[in-house]
Length: 92
Image 1 (tube, rainbow, N blue to C red):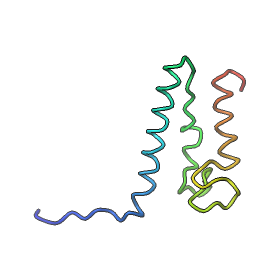
Image 2: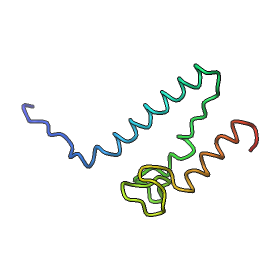
Image 3: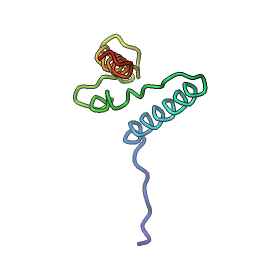
Image 4: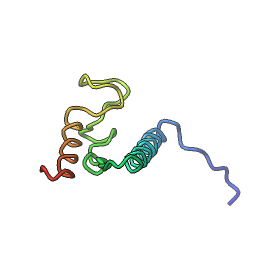
């Protein structure tokens, strides 16, 4: 149609970039776990509904409001990830 495509503002791309970065990190961690005979537990699904932009996020934004490090899990996020690991170990 001859129109010029405009890129989305950088602000709207940030959550997608963060998710892509997390996917890459998890992929590398899983590869390393497999290489060294360890089991990798993907905790992404345990925290998916509480992403950075959710009404009740389990990850801090760039400025902490709970005392957790920026862009790191809150206490609720850590608990959810621990429960996922314990479930993988058959302890939950």
